[in-house]
View 1 (cartoon, rainbow, N blue to C red):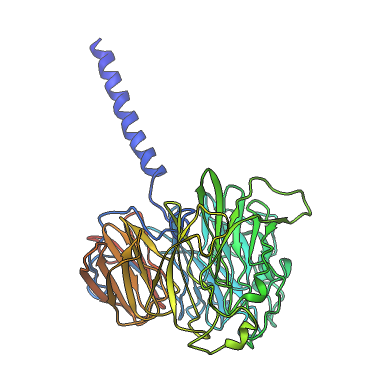
View 2 (cartoon, helix red, strand yellow):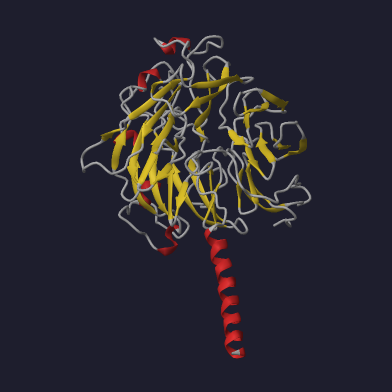
Length: 512
């Protein structure tokens, strides 16, 4: 009996040890998509995060990696890897010189370089693919697949291992793709530091759209479906929509890249600038909905797909409701209001966030071409039809136009604006608790974790504040360059992308 008890104790110990390891691996807090899965809320459950850090001394710095000269993408962390979009002004492959879009794949442990996706510019019109902009879209990762939109507006499925495990298919033209518009070679040799493209869907040519400035999309993955905003927008005159009938939201099959569905809302002619907001998802009254903020300043709710249409058919996304964030704005001849800072149509750049049967979204004129006026809107997601009047719960005016996605935490909404201000308001009423003026304008989103609010500015000041109803500044750190990217938090590490560097910040970390 004693021997049996001893054996049982050993077996129990083994089960507990391996069980804990299994649980740890399954529930490791990766960040495989921008924002919380489906809802897009900018809140993380990570704890024990640093209150401050110092790149000069290495305090709480795990590692630092140089990037290009401009970095606008948000880092994504999954399966032991960090994915980071940038440009090619610090080439890692001497074969590729000059302006390119780059997505780096780095080792999560120490930041070492594993492989890269290198994409030539779309050109020659700079307004199609802005010079030095790089790849600005954060990828979405599931298992061994990486889904990303390139600077050319291509939706791609990549092998997370790159070419290390061979060139999987069906796509086999990586060498030719890297050589697009290259006058010296028709194809590059594919090496073990190159990306492995599984399939490619060229959104501008295959969905008949016209991108503007930069193709920016964080792909929403649901089952076998990829929901992608198309970056359809104005041309280089800023007064014309080249593809007015083109979709703003499309759905692809994640396994093959087949074109499955699109919106038919007639958004195109009403796009004031471009379609840069990515979709969110939530379940309302037992029905799964996709929430999409158009370049026309309107938030749409569509019924999510439950099955793929027959081959050769592109299904129409079924609208459940629409909410106009700026109903009194001009609706006719909208491009006559270019450069009008007092009166203009509105657009939406941040993502809609689904929380407690509500949508929180920022909307307003335009940073470059429209009025400065902008708002944080709270919308009742349980309504149907045109809910512009019936669906409004509150409207809170921010300091200036806003690119940010809200963070909803403990009954509060945190959001930043281009007028250098961070706002904390009540999630039920929109009542302001506090505001804080930073040193630079903010294009990134606030992220809340461990009772703290993290956000960086384009002037290079990075702020850490208490996530509370009373304003408390915890620290402010000046980094090497400005920030347009949202911080990412994964597995106990805070990732901050400046224009020139990627910082991995961890409590009591040693410099690497």
